[in-house]
Length: 234
Image (cartoon, rainbow, N blue to C red; front, side):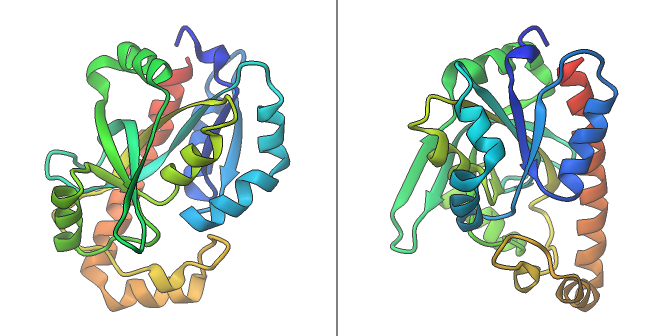
């Protein structure tokens, strides 16, 4: 990518997604961006981002560019497991029902779109406080909020950086389609965004078919995320 050197950092969820991006970058020679792991969840990032030393280093850069990467879930049938999507904006629905929108940087996003062309789809994302696990709810949210994919961090990242002068773009890989349920893993998520292994295992065992779907989709999504990272920064 011609302007790869101008991306100072990649933000990606801690754990498997972080490892996949690091593996992808390990195949790239030359100057690569730093990779910063962030916690899962909107509220956790609202606390983490202002207090992170790694983030403070980005804010000190004269013209910082940050790329958010990771996995997401589909809210519409046209976006399938393994598809790479480029965000134009993120929608967040407050408890009051009020809908807020944060936009990704238009120039940065357009440059990525021009470079990647048919390898990606440009989408509107929903950022949710919880895991959307029922296929019926996925499709309903896609229709009522006119959103294409769902994550748990995008809006919080854009909101934090909006007044800092940092330009942000987001690229994610679909790891969960909207044609089936996945296990309800909400009780397995800790307040700090980490996963509680025992609660996770119990939730997976309770819904074996949904668990298989989640595992298959996750493995495929991580594989594409790793390959795409190499391609983007080569």
